[in-house]
Length: 138
Image (cartoon, rainbow, N blue to C red):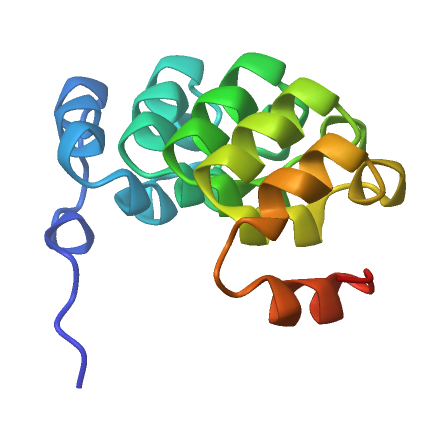
């Protein structure tokens, strides 16, 4: 049996407490109610602590350039949760690939073919596997 997250054990958490939680465990956003998942400041704090928490934010934030940029700077793999238009935003994808070459898997087809992004990703020791997963040539 998995031990519950402390946030799950509290009937009601006020916003200020949740903000403090986000500073140490951004993934705790998954336990927040819909109102808190739609709170820009909470989400910004969560993705800054753990970019992967973008998965649990209100869907509107997946198209919020500032939030997605902060998320991919912390974890390039957060690009997976970004809206299509941001997966096709060169600056966002570049930040993601610089943080984690594997994030190229979640870029748009156009950016998967970008020579500079490919060059950066090719520096990863796992490039052959990454190229295969992304359908690229090494």
